[in-house]
Length: 96
Image (cartoon, rainbow, N blue to C red):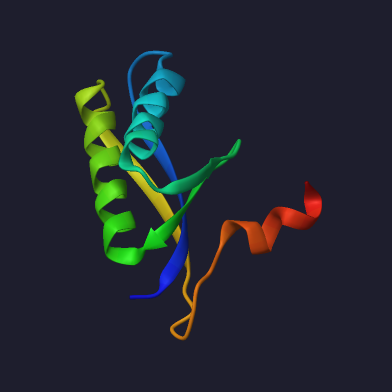
């Protein structure tokens, strides 16, 4: 299965001012998943097999709900190359 990049952003709906704390719970899911990832100011980008990454996004959404969000809007972007591997490094290595 090809290796893809998947960028996602969760926007939890909450009644309090704790949306950053809720997003932190989603990031914890990614950190514990064992995939390569980069956290940015607007989204988190992961690298791996698409099915596994989609499952991580689902768990991240559920973590937001468990942390107190009443609902979650999630935006996903996928860079897919059927013949090969898409890496985070190929996109950002020249900027480091």
